[in-house]
Image (cartoon, rainbow, N blue to C red; front, top):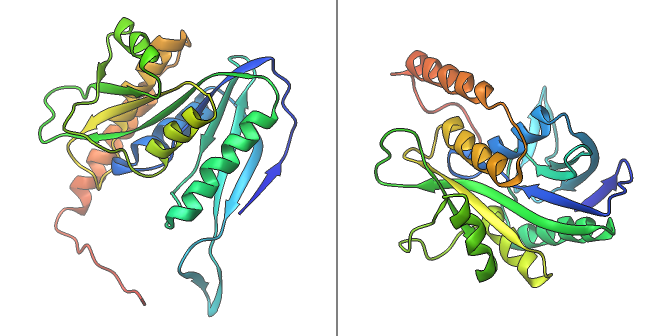
Length: 240
């Protein structure tokens, strides 16, 4: 795993939003949307090569790797970490989280808050999905309460992989963090409405105006695609 800096950042203080695809790809939808629609500039990239497979094209195989991108929105002093997947290996996941936090702290300015995001699987979701939250310090509970955001229910006892781990590791480094999780009832299909409710909550918490209408259009496109693929086979050719 390696980090490549593309541009130096100078900021006395800044926020971080870091999330990766999880159930319903919610975490990835949120961070990628923020990086695109806030017109953030890419400033660094982390490359991981932990895949237990190789890619294949026209008779040639090559090692597979993932690129995790770091963007900076200078106007809102917001660093955004996003990617298309998560590491498969727990040790690699820890390395990724710590490499990101090392980079964040190397910038030199105060990290005012780190946000994470992901999907919150519920047995039944009626109406628009709600957003629920967690914090990594008890004192931060009042921030969610003031914004009218409920806490994740006590039926949840652990939050796995990147979108949970990054919050705990941030606490170990003295960085305040809030996790925002959008309700979903389906895990295998992207859930842009859950991403929308998270972004709306973040917008309210930090007073950053964000137009979420593109996520409504994305949801409509997904519904159309589901209708087209109904009845088609879920399996294709493969090796391994």
